[in-house]
Length: 136
Ligand code: CMP
Image 1 (cartoon, rainbow, N blue to C red):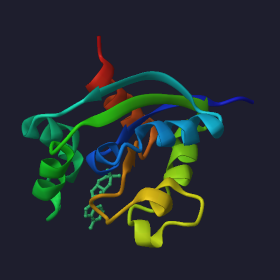
Image 2 (cartoon, rainbow, N blue to C red; image 1 turned 135 degrees about the horizontal axis):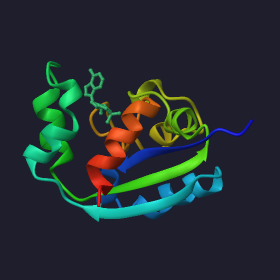
Image 3 (cartoon, rainbow, N blue to C red; image 1 turned 30 degrees about the vertical axis):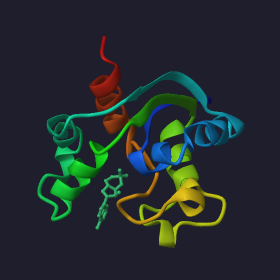
Image 4 (spheres, protein in one colour; image 1 turned 180 degrees about the vertical axis):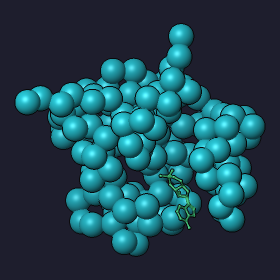
């Protein structure tokens, strides 16, 4: 049975700054993801805090939010069979040093903060995150 899902992907400031957005989009497309919606934006810090609220209690929360708001990002709705898990596999481990060969974070990630991409971690969060950026 087919299980087409949508997930949210963000190309983070470190990757946009290095003009890697088109290259990363091509990787998603080559792996069968359709990019249904996309926009390049820059968040205010309070918006980044709202987006990452789930991490509010973590010691890295403030730095994480400052970083996400530090420059332009590209946000996308990706669609594919089992898109949530597929995107997480394609991104690789949160820490680029631990990411497997062939993953986006292994290829482009600089550090655990500057790890080039974000992807929803569950179908439930995908819906929340897609609404956060694309509710019209
Ligand atoms: P992301 O998938 O966007 O979700 C939260 C982000 O917090 C994560 O990627 C990392 O870039 C960042 N982060 C910073 N420090 C840590 C940490 N110790 N553990 C997990 N995530 C971290």
